[in-house]
Image (cartoon, rainbow, N blue to C red; front, side, top):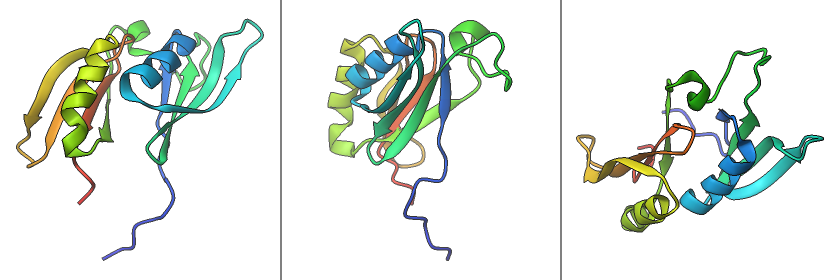
Length: 138
């Protein structure tokens, strides 16, 4: 069996048309914590790092000239991925209620999944899909 790394190895980087509003939403709805934020000359967020537990999620401004051709699902009129974040089983119901109260659209309420964990999925204002699950990587 291979040893699990003690540090994060994958850093999701999401594009948002309105990254400042996204940072505010993600902290209010999901309880993420601002770790690092860079703003541009116009005062809009260029890049932010948010803590989800001990891990970081990057948020960057959507730009027409993005060299990687990465864009917000809002710009693309749909997404291509889902982010899954661990939330302790006993906190899932309250987490869903908090997300919904902040404006997340619940697309699959808390339920027992076929994989044997509880989870729910929602969509943020720019249509990124998030799943919050008790799955702990076993």
